[in-house]
Length: 250
Image 1 (cartoon, one colour):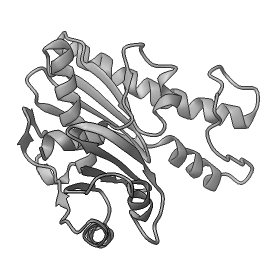
Image 2: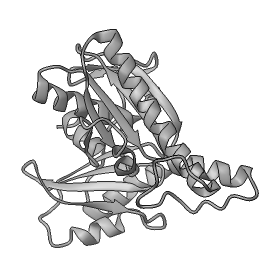
Image 3: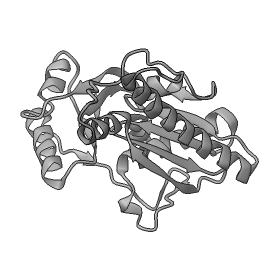
Image 4: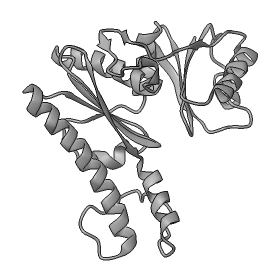
């Protein structure tokens, strides 16, 4: 069995596979003893022979995860990093390793999915997590770069901290989309609409410049919230980063 671990800023997402078939997946919120919950969830599964690790955490925090992998499964974590090119994709950053490896992995997965579906490598990958990132790849597999803004929750926290009279607990399950008649709903609607319009503008500009529509992929915890106001062509893939790890480290 192979375990893939995506150690993000706030959560650890993981999946376990046997002969390329995912048999279990989940999210580990633990910080005191990282991966213990993953170990418990897989206790009835076959022996772990490989662990692939992708981390955007600090060097010290990543080292803790690496140590936990060795302790729990008696294997060395195979660490994935951003590179100048991989799997038919060219990194658009002048310093390739400065592109977040989670974005890189999602891009690589996105290009493979786009090419399988349409024969074109053109793709727009949106990750709606702690930050909202938008990355664009052209028909030749060249990463054009992207956009980064605070994620929905981060924007709400900024407004809560910057104004004394707004109590924002979080994005509701079914947020309103129309102009609001109270401050709370107005903030929620404004944050969501702003994110959606940024995505739409990025895609429209890409289509104008290339005369081609990219494959549209959305991932991240806030993906379902944004999906309602986006083009019907957007495909929500919550494990896109983990999918990319399989290509980057086969």
